[in-house]
Length: 214
Image 1 (cartoon, rainbow, N blue to C red):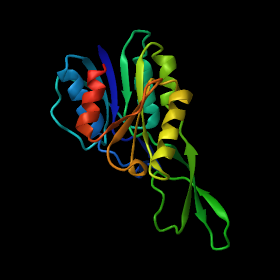
Image 2: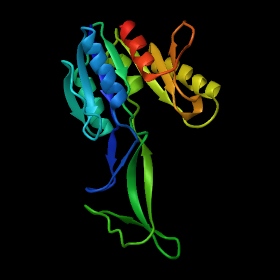
Image 3: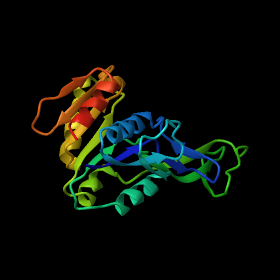
């Protein structure tokens, strides 16, 4: 089967030398891509240009991305009505920097614009603007695909995290959601439509389960 995997963090520029990004190495998506290729699938990996994962590729084609827009553009360019599998494991930035302001002594905010905002200017405020969500767009680009998203949760309980994962299944019209993060403890929970949740103790178990179901 043809498979598309996304891995690693997007980044968004504050100015020409500073950026906003997520903590992500790209290793989970990269290891999944290698495992899918090892199982005989035709794999295209969209890998962040800032990912620190650089293991040897097992017959995997790679395209690099940078910002959220660049990842969305690359996915859109490969849109197809064919039956494929899409694993969206990339850590996409929820926000991009908007205007930068200098806060004066009297509290007045003065907009700043420069290739490199002067770090000696004083206290700066950066407005954060929500980035467009990629996951809900995938069903339009890949209408017959089996799409797996990720839900990484830090706050709340494990049940809170699972509830957010279930909401993602409904709102993004995906087929599966991998829920993990500190809110869930160790391991991963695989949610699939109309099937019981599957608790997986390790990354190796998760990858094996995803590959065997493809």
